[in-house]
Length: 116
Length: 114
Image 1 (cartoon, rainbow over the protein chains, first blue to last red):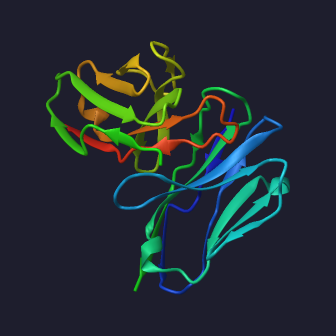
Image 2 (cartoon, rainbow over the protein chains, first blue to last red; image 1 turned 60 degrees about the vertical axis):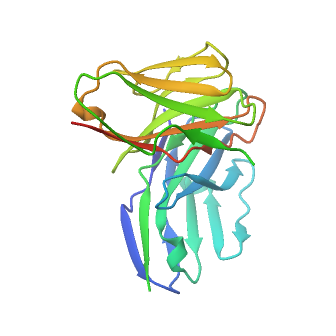
């Protein structure tokens, strides 16, 4: 069985602070993808990143960075110098690397509020 | 750009009514999905389809059915709406052959059943 856990239900920080969103997963698959999605108040989920289980190299994209650690089954997301526009619900998700109709398993989501 | 549209952003229905939620994608994707989103539970898969007229149950199919008569359109049907089906419903699509597995989502329909 696959499971994704985002233990932080809500986080609230002041603008310009750094914030880390935690994601822990469980899977028996040896190869899999991990994702982060952002859901702004408009409701539409926006794809942020995909990481496959072969590649544990951390990734940085502007103010966003991701730390994938297979040894601890974690895929954490850090926003540096947060801005009000970062306020959203963030979801971590998992799926095995197989062709076809790919079922994503989502975590519960973390609601991030950035206060001015 | 991939575009996934849903017929309504907000919908209010009464208990026992038959409800249709429509989803259309314009990128010729084979796979389409229906999720519901509830606070503290994340997104849960209701049904998905990998081809016209094909459908597969997800994790919570009870009380729902689906229809896929055309490749671009995937409908979610609540045969007899109940108050516990009040939720946000999200549609998504993806390519069959895309090994990266990214799904593209619509804006969601917030359904309230009174």
